[in-house]
Image 1 (tube, rainbow, N blue to C red):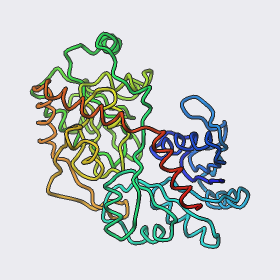
Image 2: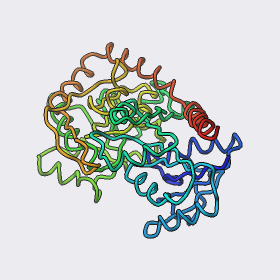
Image 3: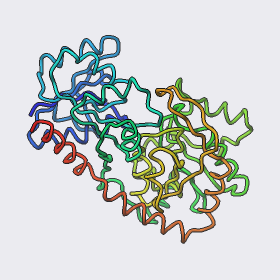
Length: 376
């Protein structure tokens, strides 16, 4: 079986991580994998976690990426094209492939709803459609499009709780006291993340819990996000309580999670959040907004759900609705976690046991089974 995968292989995005983890396992099972990536520039062999990928990744570039993709498609002649990417790219690739009689499997994150009609049409002609979340499966079902959920896995050997002594030593290295409440966010500084809301909620909490620190594992300023120091200056927030990616970049991801008392990613819309699950696996409670995939990840006692406001705006992701977190509720939930350590430990354990069920081997086998069914 020959599979051409269009995704972000060679780069650490959510789509890229899913693609590389699954493709590596499919390659090991004898499937011929060829990846085409817009974000891998090809100056060095594509690698993941410091190791070269065992399959070839064609760098498509930015300007002529579609022309380059079609050249790869013509030369490789796959049995199946698997698109692991956002629905906007699915639309463009489907249009370009209309002259080809090649089966298509779509793996995508459904960030929100409603889903714009022009993104639904390419899914109707696909051989199979996969969503990372049950939210996405249900949203597509509302339009008569059957989809299968394949939840992304996590590296179970890496994301583990640290013993208390090691955790305290790690904090000491960063100048963080044992009794400091540490809130962590692992995310990109981008508009889809409700970063101003998370900051406001944290500083409301810090007003009554001054011995607290917020680690934002992201750049403090980006073109597609916020200038966080300027934002803090505008609202009078104390930046000495903040740490950024540069402060923790020497730590492994598991070490970063283990620093924290709580981890949060509040998003206006979200197809899936690997960091929420990775934090759970490390024994850290995660908080998400009660909307999109956040509900299924942190609901049912696995984490903490933050209420959305009874208010929405229209996003630039196909005009889907953006919801906004209630910062007062967020601050109160942080206070509740601080004041109820026993209940927090129960949530941590429930979340950790659930996170242990999400493996890359399972995700890979589920996609393998879909390929087999498509080829049958």
